[in-house]
Structure formats: C-alpha cells, structure tokens
Image (cartoon, rainbow, N blue to C red; front, side):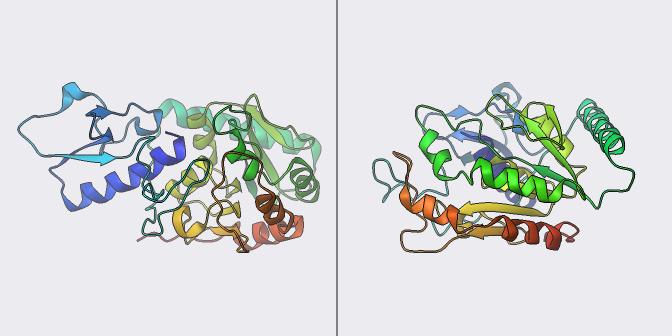
Length: 289
C-alpha cells in the first residue's frame, strides 16, 4: 500500500479504539492473516505491528486494508486499467506519532529554513508553506500513469513558486524524482521526516495523496489538487480546500495510460486559483470532531 492508504487505515483504527478500547487493532490482509509493517504505524498506541505482542485472550479488530482491498475503491465494479470509486467511503483524519528524535530533526530543518529566509530577505515572511510537487512514483512501471494523470505540471508549480516566494517561506522535501525550484528551501528526507517538518508549517499544498492525508492527520490546512482523477467525495477532507474539476468523465480513475480527460481537468486549474486558495486558507483554524 501507499502511505496515504496506511494513513487512512490509522483513521479507521482510531475510530475502533474509541468505540472499543479493549480491542487489539492490526492492519493488513485479513484473509491471508498478514499484518502490515509500516513506518506510518510507528509509535501509534492504537495499532499492533508485532504478532508476538497480540494477546490471544483478547479481541482483535482487523483493519482489512491492503493492495487487494483498498476501501476507497469499488472492487466489484473496477475494471482493468481503471479504478471505480467507492462513494460510500469517507476517510477519517488519521494519526502520526513522532519520536523525540523526529521532532528534534524537524525543528532543525525549520531553523535552517528560517536562516535561509533571513539571508535572502530583510523582512518577515507571511507564513510557512509546505509543498510537494512531484510524486516519487511518477515513473513507476505499474502505477506511473496514475501519477502522470494526477500531475499539475512543472510549469504551473514554477509559476506558483515565483508568485509566492517573496512573501512566504516555502519548504519542499526532496526525493529522487523532485523538481527543484530557486528561491525556496528544500531538504532531503524520507516520508516521516518530511511529515515531522510539515507539523510546524502553516499549510500543505500539493496533489491528492500521501502528504494530503498526512496534513489531515496533523490538523493542517491544505490546498489539495485533485484534478479529475479521483474525487474529494472519496478521499478528501472537508476542512481542506480540494481543487476538483467535475466535468464529463470525472472522476476517471484511469491508470493504464495518459488520460486526455485528466490533462483537460488540470488545464482548468490555474496558478491564480491555487495562489488565492493558499492566501485564504493558510491560517484557517481546523476543528476536528
């Protein structure tokens, strides 16, 4: 599974633990009795990853979420090369529990980013924006087209950065597929490290996916670019500004080839739309029931 799937699983685990405090909760493949081991579940008091720690005398709740059973997909209707979405599913914000070392790491990155700002400008920034612009899996042989169809495009991100970078401290985690932008602070990290930094930023801006679910778990405002591949009705959070283009064919779910419908949807999302949404939402107060 991807990190987004696992973060959604932590939301299900959280609900079950609230309802049934005595239940032991695991995530994985119920049919095969395989328990998922994931960095997303580290330090999470609601989820057991080690089978040896399960008490056989107590009830176990299995969050049945794995590559063959993602709850946001309607498996009965999905066809080859195209996902059909489960409109009866709606994610609950998940949870991330950071270690002391991860928090120390994040604070160092924030300190370095502020030093970067002070070297370039002699005035205070208006806020801290955490951005993700490119999926690590965009060239994946199996799922690459999915991320191509969810890609807003390098030129759009470049234009957005140019409009914002003199007023906002923009922080970007880097991976081997990342596009780099001048005038913003970037750092190499893994997913958990990046999320620990997001914890101290004002807003997340990027495509629908793992970081959007992380922002929800951290109660962060978000401007989430959905395009037309999947709908926020299925994987979005109401407290985020979800930029979705609802035209004929949306949400298409195509992952077998580059989709003209998705390109059309992304072309309708302008740089000004995203800029205005950031300014509107960057200090939005998030209240989660």
